[in-house]
Amino acid sequence: MISLKNLSLFIVAAVLLFSSCAQKPHYANRAERLLAELRDPMSEYVFVMAHRADWRNWPENSLEAIKSAIKMGCDILELDVALTRDSQLVLSHDPTLDRMTNGHGRISDFSLAELKELRLRQPHGVITENLRIATLKEALKVCEGRALIQIDHGWDLYDEVLRDAREVGLENLIIMKGRTFVDRNELMYAPQLSVPQEQGYKLFSQYMEAGIVPPCYEIVFSEQSPEVEAFAEDIVASGSRVWVGTMWKAADGGLDDDRAALSGNPDEIYGKLIEMGCSVIMTDRPAQVIESLHRMGRHAALGVVE
Image 1 (cartoon, rainbow, N blue to C red):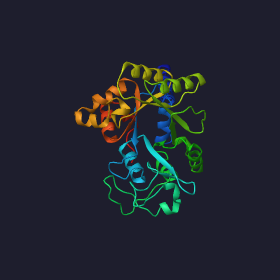
Image 2 (tube, rainbow, N blue to C red):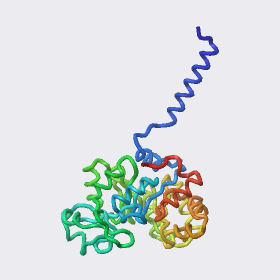
Image 3 (spheres, rainbow, N blue to C red):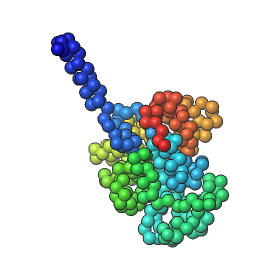
């Protein structure tokens, strides 16, 4: 027979176990967990966004670059889209083929089938043997369950992006961005704010007045200043994340990837961004950022995806 004391201990243990389970929601996959973190204003997780994916090791915007960035632990892939002659979305930063393929001319003058005959160039310009231009739908399928996608050069292609995402049932993975007010919710949208400039303050005020809370705002600033820090604080207080691109000084006030690499102390550079409220870092050196964030305990929670 169970004593009252043992019964009480059993009940307490059961309650604690139930509470522990209740406090840790189950996520079907990494992408689902990332979405929950992105929308949680209390989360301290810092997102790493790979600019054009892992372009230092693979052709930019290629499926191979996407897979490599995901494997190293990136959370979001920043990708560029262009429209073909037959209205298909492919991944390309440039409107022309010359820099990144063995072809010539404007992407809009070719069909998808014709573009698939071309080969991509490596970062140093050498033509690959068999790497091809990817479509947005192919990229979404690679990221399914594993990472999110941020679409650049696509603010005029919102409907086409939505079309392709719906065709593969993965519209929840996409973050669009632009410099105008967008009152649509089919896809996540991140406004881009220049600060401290009128455009940034005006666009932020439009969202505040409309009661719309984007998942994040990208802020662009050429100099560090109290005004920039105060604006970042306002964004965090509004319930959104602050996103900063660390590719070059004109966008991050000198808190950039190359400076972090050359300083010998990247934690100091990225730490300053985190201190000012930044929790989404778009980078050309994703491995460097991830290593730094792991040392600071701001990225290890979700681990690395194989």
